[in-house]
Image (cartoon, rainbow, N blue to C red):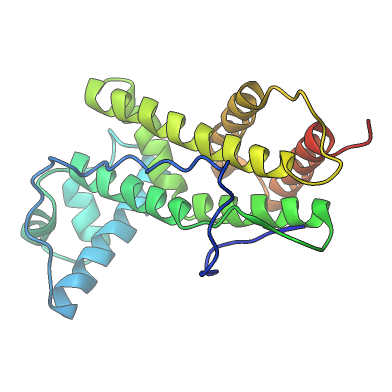
Length: 228
């Protein structure tokens, strides 16, 4: 079994797989009109990249709109052509992260090494997260004092927990899989572990992240597929 990353099409998930839609963080935000010209799109990308860097280095409260614009080498007025506030920029970054995660194809295909497939899945999912560490650091900080973001965070965690549970259900359909596993409970534990690792990843060397992914692979394999 190999758990594939994004890019595969033409296959439907098993009937028992439960797939839910991701939270839409920008719904109702009344963003400025989306740019169409490549020059404007490039400026928006620069602002988002600058936001990621400064949010990661300074956190949400300490990073100002002026600094973000300066980091992107753009006038402050250009920032407000794309985002009405620093909060909207943060929402856009987190929404982009969720979009990347939603594109991961978590369905198994026959053949291959189950352990290797699990490890590849975890590495692929976490590599998407790693590009947005600055946004996640800022999000955690901002959600402490912003009730709207806190509610969105609950929705995000419910969605990611559901995604993890879906992977476990698919693993549970494989020949020789364990029976009677508390999939919702295990999914909650794993999801909490994933978010905890993400919160620490800015300070962790790659070797330690790799060790954590190896441990998570071992845990999932033995919980769902290990020898009984």
